[in-house]
Length: 508
Image (tube, rainbow, N blue to C red; front, side, top):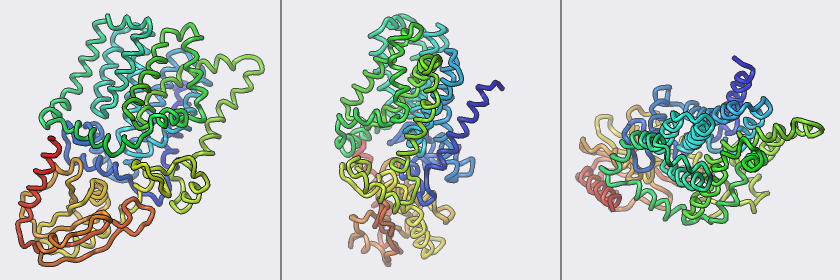
């Protein structure tokens, strides 16, 4: 391999290794990861919560051994591939090793590792956005129409991963319209590429149609319970913090569109950034939704800086440019990554109360960030459910009914009991409840403020409280496990009615 490729391999390995070093062993998987992992056992062209791409990765994890190592490896790899695309963009413009290294370091030591820490659609989302912009850049650079079809592939799989790729499409439309590159709209191959994107997305669109568009219900719930607490100004002020140690590279990239003759044809990227951020702000999007915009700008910024710093005394600034992202990242890592146990993290956040790092989606402030609290207590919950299950006769069909998808997925992942499957009326699990056999026993998993009712107890011959999550740092602190043995009524019929009610709610 060439020298540059050896360096690229080195940066990729650093990126992947770093992802494992940024999380302390006291943390478990995140509640959202459990939902995505369970989708591997229910492959389909769509889900209530997300499109299907994440489930494909879940199935790959299942084939690889279904362990935490592989759960963490997939987003780390996707993050590394994002760096590869930026690297190849720089190479296509003839960027030198300094430019390549500067971009790689700027991306590795940024907020990207925070998203690549969790197995969620976000990592592929950023990769897809970067690839789409990479393909469009290559089209304008080479005028090869094949790149428009590759752009369509990016949009198609981006849509199958996360619907917010539509915001990038809006931003690109506006960005191109405001520059001479609007001539692309006269190119029939652009519409051929969009046709490819539509064909790739079509199975999911058909699934949405045949299932009464559950994405609408999901977005309504998201808007009502999460996005409503987001301040538009906070969205904008949060953007620079994602690349606080390497933002100078992004700024250099934006400047280069107006100062470098060979970059002026890519000025549409400047307006795309502004337009996409404006649309996100209007819809009260979460700040991290926009992170996929930024990696490609590292390509232009790194090349521009390599030219600025190549001569005279300015060349002595090169080491500083390379070290700065690493230094800033090292300084703030204890604030944004779970690199120490919750007890130590609390003491860190107590020293910086004004940063708002422990404000959750409900708008309230807690001891540790919500994502970290969502990574605690799950193994304890699974152990208590296993204990409850051990008290039931082996030949009696038992269901584990949970309050939310995090509980159900965590039990299914961490259980030591072969064949045990927890369900819930929450999210996609409402479509996965097996009522083919008469239910004799039920294990209830309830949030701390949702007690087992006397009516529920009366439907069974025996009732026993098994225990609850005792980790005070867990978001699920107090979640209880209750065993009900010997059904005295038709539990299947009761659950069937509840399932129909939930599905009716989705259709509305």
